[in-house]
Amino acid sequence: MRIFYLFIIVFLSIACTHTSEGQNDLNDKKQTPKMETFNIKKFDQNKDADETYRFEREDGAIVTQFGDSESGYFDYARFPNELFEDRKGYYPDGVLKIHGLMYYNQFQKGVWKYYDHNGKLERTIDYDEPFSYTWEDVLEFCDEKKINLLKNTTRISRNTIENKPKWTIEWQIGTAESLEITIDGESGEIINQTTIELDKG
Image (tube, rainbow, N blue to C red; front, side):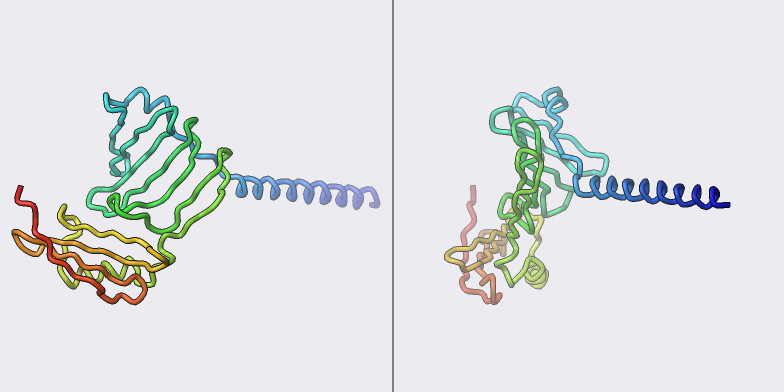
C-alpha cells in the first residue's frame, strides 16, 4: 500500500511539473509574437517599371507596395470607399519598422507603433491625444453640413502649432468656389472661415 501511495505522489509531482512548464511555454509565446516581415521576393517578382506592386487582397483591400533595399519598403492598404489607409513601413531587410493609420495623405490617426530592428516595440505616439474635439466630432460636423467626404474636392487636415491643435476642413459649396474653415481642436469653436475660388482649369 505504501508503494502505491508513493507512486501516486510521484505521478502527481511529474504532472504538476509538466503543467507548469507548459504554462511557461504558453506565456513565452504570448510575450514573443511572431515578427512581421515584408515579402521582398514576392515584391521583386511582381513590381512594375515604377518599382510599385498593386494588388487586391483576399479581404478586398487594395494594396500598394513600393520601396527598395536602400530606403526600405512600404505597404499601404485601403478598402474601397474607406477614408483611412493602413500604412506599414519596413527596414531594408524587410523587418517591420512603423505601423499606423493615415487619412488621405493628410494626417496620422490614432496610435502609431515604432519598432526596432529586432521587431521589439520601441515607442508609440497617439496622434489623437491633443484633440479634445475628436475625429468623431468632425464627422458629425460634416454630416450636419452635408459634406461628401469621398469627393476629391473635400479636404480635411489637422496640425498642432505651439501646442494649439487645429482642424481644417475644405469642401466645395458651388460650381466655382469652396469653403475652408479652421476649427479649434480643443473647444470645437470655428476660428476662421475663408471662401476660395476654384481653379477653372
